[in-house]
Length: 238
Image (tube, rainbow, N blue to C red; front, side):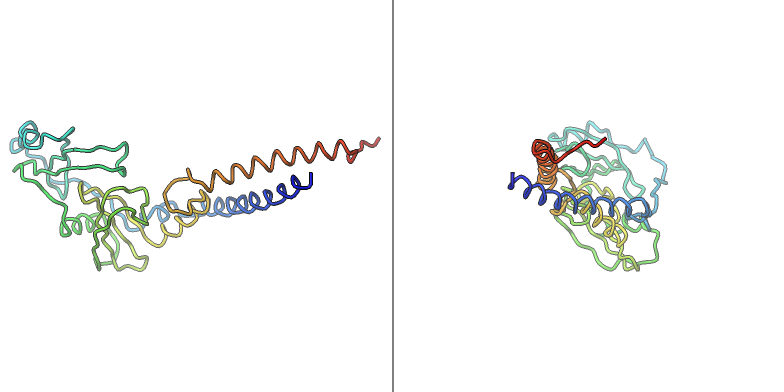
């Protein structure tokens, strides 16, 4: 029984520490500003403004003939211009591995999200006081968005909260904004979900270990209670 008590005490320390972390991070989640925590401090809502000239549109069937590996086609707008987004590889979610080709819907010419285009998209989604100071091309894994599995342009604005805008290179999609507020929130999310590998998921070995420790804490406590009862440690007084 000695080893049961010893492991019970160690399990109680491990589980107790994590419960304290959950408590502190839970308090932070209740007090935090949700807009800032999501990195949207200076994020502007982008609206499509130019009307669509349907007579100038290239027939989608003609575009598909040139890109026969496509499995889907969709009309989207980038910087107030219409484009066909051809899907070659489609993940379940937008941040999963996806392969697209962008084609100008008026000219059928292939379009690339280069550094200049990414900067313009970022500026339209930003309403803060900063200016673009640096642009980088990043491959996964992206520290600020660990779930993102596609390459992105990182556009850094020199404001007081170090805002970064991330634009997906193959679609022009705004992955999101990140700044000091979001990075602080990410630390608490990491602690709360025990995501110490920064994988953007709570399905990890740490949570499995804690679940086993909590299960052992319950079972060993039950065994210890029965053991004490059999030894007559519990007495009912009138």
